[in-house]
Image (cartoon, rainbow, N blue to C red; front, side, top):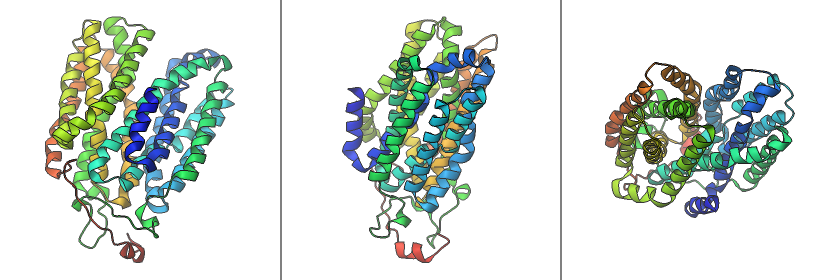
Length: 425
């Protein structure tokens, strides 16, 4: 019921983005469905937690390197073909997982999925192509909500299919991924403006993304884009530490068991979905995007700091709700700003970079969190996260000067005949 209501809210605004929500949902569902099998891997393949940790991070490591490559290729050859290639790679990864009889095959399956993990950055690039600037933060937030929904359903579904071993969930994931690929091939239209020769579109983008001769500014020379990427880096690094080691923190600080920790994380996800569906747009419309993001970033600082001083379960519950609020009000808007800081020629590349930053946080977050929690006083865990969160909050004052507000619209026409004549563009 919750999934149906949320997806209906998504498709009301931009029905042509429906294949994206399905693709992202299935991709994350396929990953999260195998999480209950981590203890099974320990016993079945006679390995240790370090190897299992490397198994999980192997996907993120290869996604870190290949995400920007796939994103940039989508800037050149089109979004749809690269999205289909990514989906085919995901299917291949699940099929390999289905027949994995040893730990080496598990690594190969996860690495293949990481190499072709372009669905996130390319989906974000498609949003940048078709969604006006004032609506991009809202639609980028939808990706996060879709991610959360998949994580709510995936682990429980994997547990239900555990009777069949890892082959059961892997088979279901491959079937769902195949359906998504077929759906994408049939219903997703190419959105890259330079490929839309029949019906040129009006692309809405920032004046800061082009020079006077209509040539793109490289991302590394784009001050706004680089500033937003730095801001996003610190946001996801703090989130990576928290998400990767929260269960360990809950056990060490409050002696929470696995069931209770799982229940808390589920409630966090449900809260984000409900908040996004009911309250998020009202706050955006009232405050505007920059100030809404600032509100979330300020909430991160306070919530993470208080996390280090939790002594009762009820205190932790309140803080977790505030952390969920922080993510719901800041991350999607930040990605929306990042999309708006470049033109369509660099949408795929910058979204690939942002996805690489997500992967980087998944690699280093658990390591940093483990080190912090190994200290004699784990109060430093919350203080460190709070300090990381101060930097993106300070940078948000500069973001206010960009004019990236949901209540203002900047429209620019793209001369497609000039794009076709100039091979450098």
